[in-house]
Image: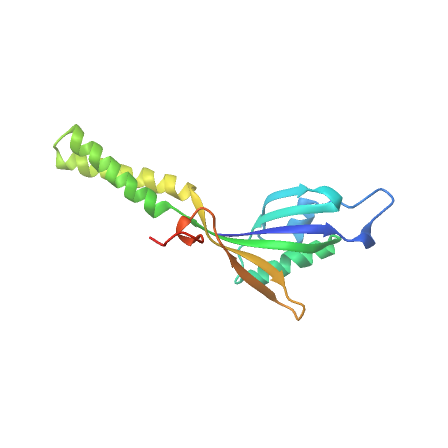
Length: 169
């Protein structure tokens, strides 16, 4: 799953005597098909924070669609962050199998009961792990003046091996 976090600014040409226009989630969803709006928050000075989940062939295509839709609603792009997420189903299934198998062995010496407990642990662990997500890669997206996007990799804080000063393990 990919998420896109954009900071948008109200275009001064769309200012009315009543103030700065607001972004409507329904209007954005009509302009960008398949978008799941995770957050839409008004900030100071007519800025908005838009955080969406969107599946497209490339990050560039997704960013172009989002920025184009924002422009149609009277807002301009300020900056963006792209995050690629991964679920932890495999890790959860492994821990569940080990935990379920360990309970089965310690509770009884029956191999069939141990296998059933391990299978139950795999199912529960996989289900729990699929609900836990972590950021795999994060990019700062910069719009190029000649068209297109430049994606600059960012350091994901939850992985100490990727931080400066830490040795990869």
